[in-house]
Length: 202
Image 1 (cartoon, rainbow, N blue to C red):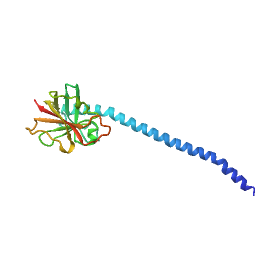
Image 2 (image 1 turned 90 degrees about the vertical axis):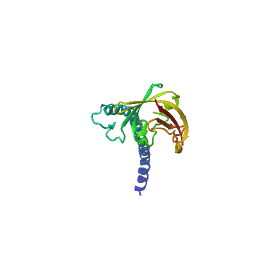
Image 3 (image 1 turned 60 degrees about the vertical axis):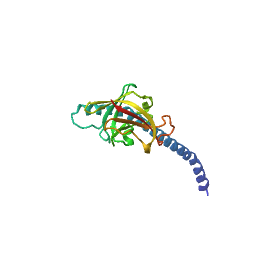
Image 4 (image 1 turned 135 degrees about the vertical axis):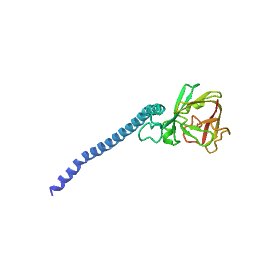
């Protein structure tokens, strides 16, 4: 009979350490999750800092022409720099990337060449935020990998639905379009409207 009370005392006394163990385990899990979130944020910030440097280097190497091909900014990239856009009135330059995938657009504007009017697409809150400041008559320069530069000037800026983007008819190369989401101050990204800046070749 003496085993009964002793067993009860042992069970009661082990309750406090078990609660402490649970609290410590939960605290460790939460701390681990917090560190993981900080690590993820740090990784994103590192990518945001490093990617433009690598893209600039790949563009410079592409223009050197030693390989004859556009070079990837990092070995596993699914895009490469193919043009540099100059906006003299804004004091801004942008290196454009091949392929219109969302992954490529995260690192810069992308070029789509379907039809007679090539179009550069970029995010409204990063690379193409400056489009809202372009005015009719402002120059835009399109520099290619062979260092040739084509000069354009802004002729129009309109808001259109993404499923019905329209540009004027013209000779191939007469126009170029710059497209981003609209409105610029939208709280949620991915709406159906697009801001289209049209530039004509000089």
